[in-house]
Image (cartoon, rainbow, N blue to C red; front, side, top):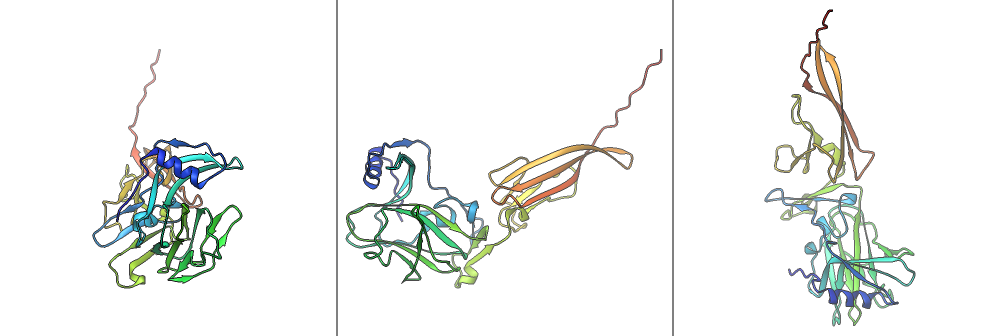
Length: 299
């Protein structure tokens, strides 16, 4: 499957001006990569993907390379193009652009790994009367919602449902962006070769904080984040010495006396950024402190 990027800035600007008329001034933002890879091949027989607020638009399980598409006339915008619409609102173009003309509809489809909703934007909005099959679930036309700000919402999807987006034939360019999967699950383990949906997808409902642990009781042991939830696989474990893109990590040290010895006691507070209510607080002996003897000189 080919992956195309807009590397020619003039081409990008032409597409932006074509999609958004009304005197838009546009500029390229260097380094604004729109596609974020969120997958990790942790073993030969399964893949791990973040979901919900742990994943960005068109990332992880839903990154463009994972979609089935019989036609290959779409372009992935890897550089952000920023401009303003007629109302003066800022528009940032990233995502997928469907080129034209198209003699037949172009379809992108994917099997959904957990229950939830898909939301996205598409410009211009396809006319429902001329494109009744714009969104399909398991090959059937379906109802969907469009908010006043133009954000589309799919119907509620079950694990194993096949979601399809069909771009109608014609001479119009279409811009597809801000694709996000809304679900109560924080991640999913995918076994691509499994024969049934139940075996192919194992959604993880707990937050990531449940996968933080201390590997030993000895003083001086830092906490670990086990990404796949399987502590027998250590290659995916991340030591939490400071805050990361997933966790806020804080610790406070206090000097205490235990069994007649001075001990440095460290209190860890770890919060999950995606779900702020998910937090862990644990106090552990960190190290013994040397005994300092002072003598007072007599005059």
